[in-house]
Length: 142
Image (tube, rainbow, N blue to C red; front, top):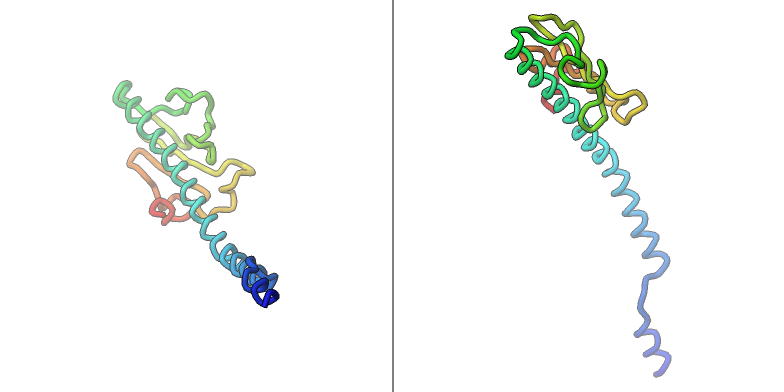
């Protein structure tokens, strides 16, 4: 009788049960990790858009004050001609800027996490986002 009671009171998991749980966790992690990386990329794309919208707002203020767009980021208050986006995932610069128009571009920081993203280049001009000139027209929408 005593031997039977001893076996009934045992608690814990068998090695087989632990291996099954680990296998299931591995499968779930394998499926979830790519989705997690894509969610990070999308969130970091917002950094590029936010930076470009800040450039656009500064350009509009400059145009309202001086009657012309700035041709350099330093004229808008940035420390350099190529400036990091707010979170630092992208580099912002002005291309083809004149008194009457401007083109602002955001590209991934070299060696950064966004370099492998399909949305490598975001473009915004005096009229707003320019999806047709961005690396993928759908990037402004995703």
